[in-house]
Length: 207
Image (cartoon, rainbow, N blue to C red; front, side, top):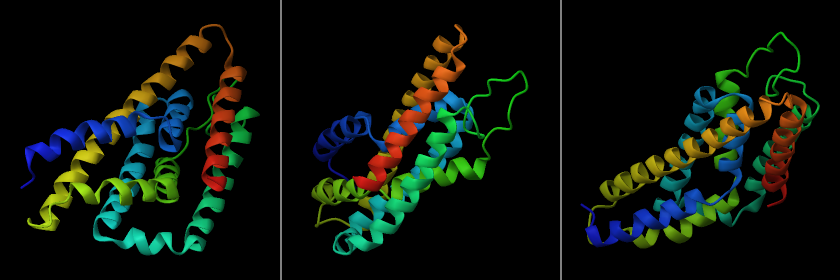
């Protein structure tokens, strides 16, 4: 269905891009620190749904229309960025469900729906993600072959690559939590995670 010569270029290209630090990867690392890898899987699920939708839209040309109407992005960007920024400030202050509790009694963890929504909004509201898929995905589609089958295979490969990279970043966040947690620097860990979350929010709103 897809030429091996195209796949030999497609796989390393998208692996390199996914490994590059960005909003979704930073978010995965932050939640790996504060929520743990297992709960971060819910954010990954939402993010992968968003990435799949963006990739599909790019493949069928919808993204080109969306990019001509930046006001549609502005709403997603500012609302999503403000929400992530708010969460970051709460984490920096060691408050809220996203932060690691500094007390002996653990705070209730963030809900699955909250985590999934964070991932979805971050993926869909990222105009750089749309532009990236518009630029890189179409060249790998062969006009002489059936488009739906090609698009399905490529999107599935993208999601597998994205998931593995998200998992890697979340594990890195967990490792950082262990390193700082051993010395009792819970507030410092919250401030690192909160600062990164605020950075993601600013990146989303202003990028």
